[in-house]
Image (cartoon, rainbow, N blue to C red; front, top):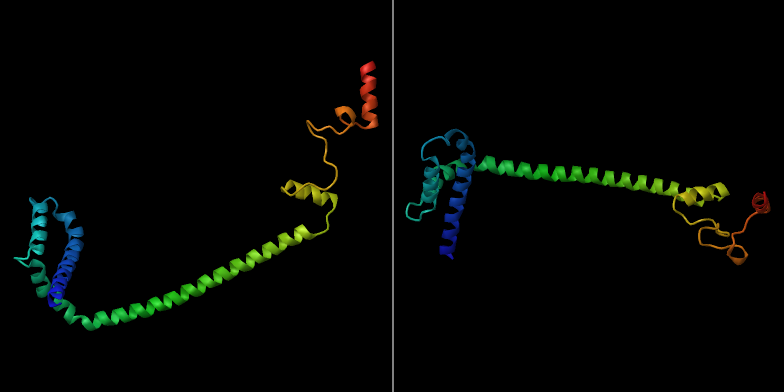
Length: 174
């Protein structure tokens, strides 16, 4: 078990140093990319960090990172406690705001829904039926109006009113 733990500590030191290197590299690349063999030196540095013979990451961790972390341990712990408290307060605050928004949305939906329901339930007059029909609701009950291909009179002739039939026969004779 000690062998696995030692290997884990070695990789932990490497990844911490590599993360610091990557962060520093972001800024130094802007200024030092013109330097001859800059990229080759970066590759050599990463190989030095990884090498089990040079133990570069372990050396840098023990010389610089560990002493800094040890001296600032109390401050780091205080910051973590503060962050925990702030995150809890933020969670409660945003949770309350979310519930308020959800409650407002539910009340608005209910009030709009109630208005739409009362619109549909009021007494129906002919004018009401035509406005509902325009909304896509079913047509009022009664005989459907004659349409193309629909015969409503005898022998497939459309049914006409008396005045319309008289005017049609008089115009045919004239």
